[in-house]
Length: 141
Image (cartoon, rainbow, N blue to C red; front, top):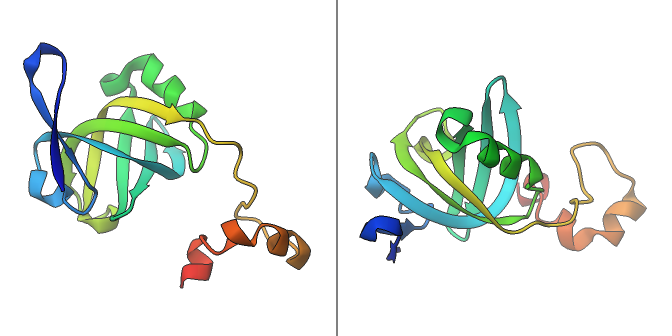
């Protein structure tokens, strides 16, 4: 699904779903979704974004987003909602074969800390949070 949005300067920027990203390689697009995960590897940060159609690896680099963008990245907790702008690149290492080189990152809602982490939890804890537990990759397998 593709929508067009007006941005400053009168330039139309398509808003695409993650599933449709492959049709926009080399183009700047906007995506909206929830933070599935985030991690850092040296100077580069990775934001894994999900929407109803899939997941997308978003590459967040200081030279593209500046210090403000990096601060925003650090604020985003798992399940926070955000709007991401960037250039779609083909990369076979990325989930789905494509990644987004982020040029702008805007939080729409910062979520509370997600209670289920990678560590092992007891049965009582998991039963109390089963509405979240069933959304983990292990339970979806």
